[in-house]
Amino acid sequence: MAGKLTDHEILLAAQLRQADLVANPPLLALFTDNITPSETTTLGSLSECTFPGYSRQVLDYSPTIVMVGHVAPIIPIALVFTRTAGAGGDNVYLYGVIDDTGTFLLWAQRDPAAPLDMSIVGATYTVTAVRNTTDL
Image (tube, rainbow, N blue to C red):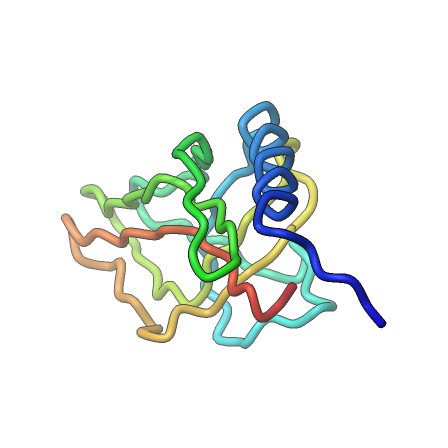
């Protein structure tokens, strides 16, 4: 018979992971690819946004972890991307989390509202990078 983790052990494991995320914060990036990411999706296979005002942002995973239904999600602070003045624009389909060195795609998720038009000056896109726990 398989064992079950207690809520206490789940929370301890989440706190260890959170400490690593705070010490080595990953980056949040936006992508223009009209795909559904898979296990084989890599950073090199994606096209990063280039709209004026865009740059990768550092994720802040410091908020307190709260257990919900025997799950301890580590939820970062929401980040806002804003289209500034200048020529160009993108449609955003995906957001992805990249390791702190900017080298590896850790995971990506298609936005269900995609495409999101970032061609209009002042357009904003807010992302709370919560990984879908069914993918774990």
